[in-house]
Image (cartoon, rainbow, N blue to C red; front, side, top):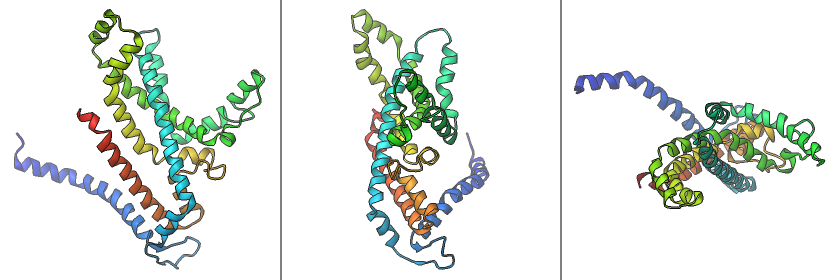
Length: 290
């Protein structure tokens, strides 16, 4: 049993790391909060002045804000639907015994380890390019006109790219949960004459409910801050068709040089993200305790 002396020593040894992590989180947040109350433009150095809540007023009344919130929800919802449904189907497939199963599992999980910027560039130049892309080539083979995904269906394109990145994560979590299912339940149901669909909806899906909850909770938190894929492919366009809340803050801060307004937008984004996270943990997270 650990003595009081050993506990004090352990606290002393981990305190530098804890203090470093706290500083890493608190200092940027404090500076962002401070800048959000200033009229601070990078094109006018040395002319910062106190603005109070004016930056928040301008940001929250900007029509681009409501559009960005809707685009953020659209992106998160679209990716969640694809990854959860696709993850369940891939988990069912990979749970079967077939030749080359290990290699297929590695290939399915591999996209999760690709950097978002790299995957966005690959999709933009190799697949969605209307002239030299793979989809354009397939369209020509079937006698169809090439489709410019990033111009004609920009949000759908972003959803496809981000879903491709997160599908391996969902598949891995759901496959792990599926392999913990007692095979005797499925065998008993099959002997009783239950069809595959009945076994899936009454045995498999309820068993996967906790894993699905984990996937939704974790992915939502990360998807709210999607940025690199938008910057590399569409730059928030055409117009504001793919401008989510994170990209709007970037535009305000680094393209319009309005550090005060961008900081206010960042604080608003943090508050909204925490509201969503708390809501998910209270509503969906109850399933984890069931």
